[in-house]
Image 1 (tube, rainbow, N blue to C red):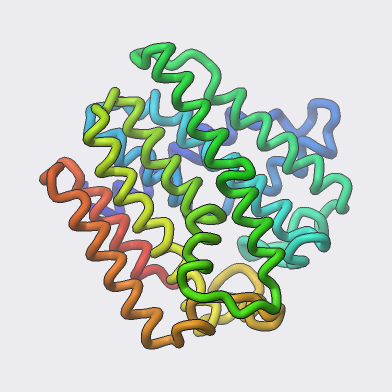
Image 2 (cartoon, rainbow, N blue to C red; image 1 turned 180 degrees about the horizontal axis):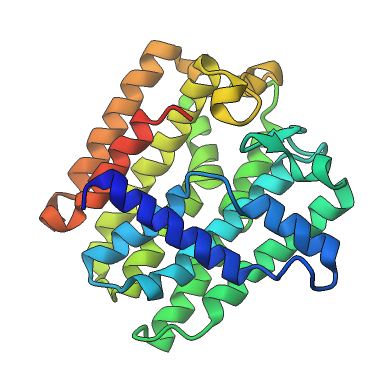
Amino acid sequence: MDFLSWMTSIQQRTEAALETALPPADIAPARLHQAMRYSVLGGGKRVRPLLCHAAGSIFGAPGDILDAPATAVELIHAYSLVHDDMPCMDDDDMRRGKSSCHVAYDEATALLVGDALQTLAFQRLAARLAGVSPARQLEMLALLANASGSRGMAGGQAIDLASVGLRLDIGALEFMHIHKTGALIRAAVLLGAHCGEAPPDALERLGHYANRIGLLFQVVDDILDSESSSETLGKTAGKDAAQNKPTYVNILGLRESKAMAGKLRQDAHDALSCFGVAAARLHELADFIVDRTF
């Protein structure tokens, strides 16, 4: 199967798994459930589930087992977007080409949507995974919790909010994005590998790959934010610059940011060298992250 066909198949199975995991829209409290489905379904590149499935495939993990961590990490990601868009955070009215959750519904509902999606993610990952040892599954739960909390994504967002108007150096900017963006991307890769009972040395190599990919994703995001339209991105373009937030582009410049993206892509490829052709999908995802237009 070529990469685009594989990517489409994983995106479709992830959409189906999310559809099943989310409460039906007609079950009380119906408005909350409608808003949860509105915020999760029918949009997004599903990069984290793609990474989860690609990493798991190296170690022979079956797709129906990988669906659980792939869904869990995507639910955490969706919750973070709902909260990020709220007026108390980034105050953005547009997400994935439609109104943000707090605009389509209201702020209180959006807050509860994020809370409920976060809880649902752990409920999904806590269900028994056939072929995965209980001890390994506990490690996976701890991994997702660490990646989501104050030492991961939430902490990165706190640093981001505190950095508005500041002139960060490149090291401080990388520290922020290793947490805000990179932690959940790293979790997606390692959760997939855990489903195949990957050995410690393989997890270490995949962790390095994921760290490079996490920074790469943010560098490319900053480049697209400076070059693309809101219609192309599906969210408000130029928002970080308008809010005087530190980005790779305003610290390094556009040319150097693109050079950094190229270096991070090569580092990611190099980290996979020990896996041979089994890691082909992870190689292709590194290229996809660089070459994407939205």
